[in-house]
Length: 104
Image (cartoon, rainbow, N blue to C red; front, side, top):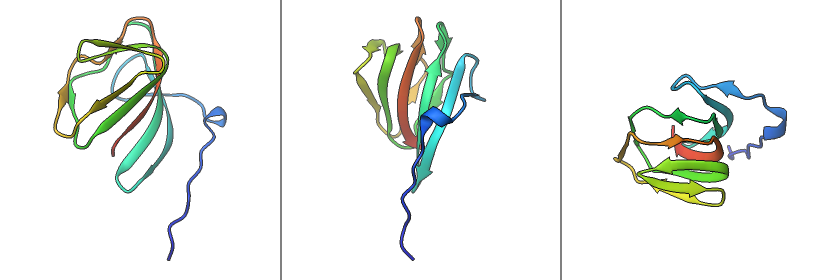
């Protein structure tokens, strides 16, 4: 049996509220082999709760600005959190939309 490609059109998906924090909305783009990809939208003033990374986490900022580990990342910036790291300061003062790939 061969693997099948998966495709998602984010323009046809509604935003859903995240279960993890207020002000966070997501579009689940897909998952495979223990990895998942989401579009994430943070409302202004949103702060994500403390969490650890079971595997690497890749963030690419599409619009707005996020703060990760004290560093401001604007559109076009990427942040990578290695497996085993903990994060308690991922936030957006102005609001942001970003793509994230993480271990499911």
